[in-house]
Amino acid sequence: MVRQIFIRPSWLVIVLVMCAVIIFAFDRSPEQNSKLKQELVSKQEVRDTITLSRFRNSAENELCFKCHGQSKYSYENPELGKVVNKRMYSELVISPNLFYTSNHRQFKCTDCHSEDYATFPHPGNLRMEAKANCIDCHGGDPQYAKYHFDAIDTAFQESVHSTKHSQDFTCWMCHNPHTYKITARSSENIKETIIYDNSICLDCHSDYTRFQLLTTKINPNILQKHEWLPNQELHFESVRCIECHAEQRSDSTLVAHKILPKSQAVKKCKECHSSNSQLMASLYKYQAKEVRSASGFFKGVMKNESYVIGATRNYILNLISLVIIGGVLIGIIIHGVLRSVKNN
Image 1 (cartoon, rainbow, N blue to C red):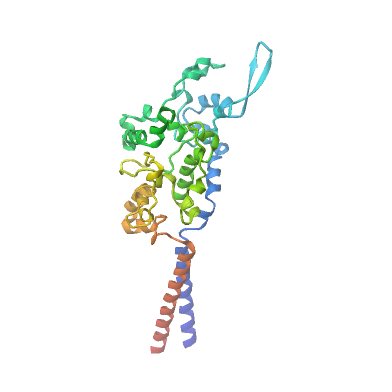
Image 2: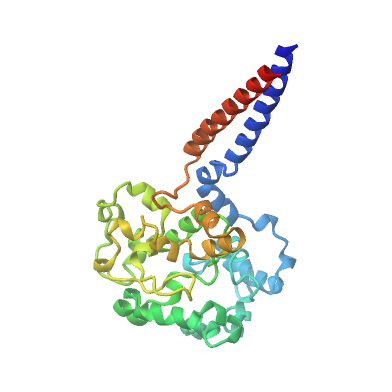
């Protein structure tokens, strides 16, 4: 009788404790970090699942995408009496997949481009049309005041991109208006934000052809230039280029736009690997604020997936530590049950 009283409660307690441990341990699945690139690519290829009627000007835009949404286009030439097929210049091809997931997906093409583009063939003088910049639409508008576009423009004008290349370097060099989307405010996954934002920098700094559009210098090898970094691959996966190459000045803008000369880039480990981390003022600024408001400061910092010594979460170590803690708790419970049974 004593044996039965001991076994049943103990096994029940063990099962309950282990279930709790497993549920807590799997609070953050390693799959979130293992398939990030695949997820990012798949999210771009969503056109087939999008109902175009969701977007206010999709019907008008589809007239443009009929030609500019593919590498080839065709038109009827009455003089030749036949349909002519032409190849579209690559820089004039706009991916509908990316446009309908971008920030500007609700706009129509002629909101930014001349209404004369509705005529085909397009008038030749439209090739000289000046491109609008972000500040042309977003500057001085109360509707967008919370995003501080004027402060962003001021920081950009002070950056090496602007001071070295003057009018040749515009917003569109980094932020293609047909594809750009904010990830820092909308993505629930910091790693996804890192991949997307770094790809903006690498579009030029790892592409010889684009790099040569602005300079005669040879495009430096990114990996060689960053050989001094310990755990180089981990750094590239865990932080954005702008964390070390941009001035983090204020809390008013979501992303820093004053790109610094390479001589002023961050090279001291303590700038990021400390309690007063620069990462908390840049990469994790928005997410930390959101999490802290919901969970409190301590939980907000510890739940953040930041790359900071002492706060970095590792799935395997989490699991091992929780199993150890669970084992200790189980031992204490079994010991208490045994003492209770003996005393009875």
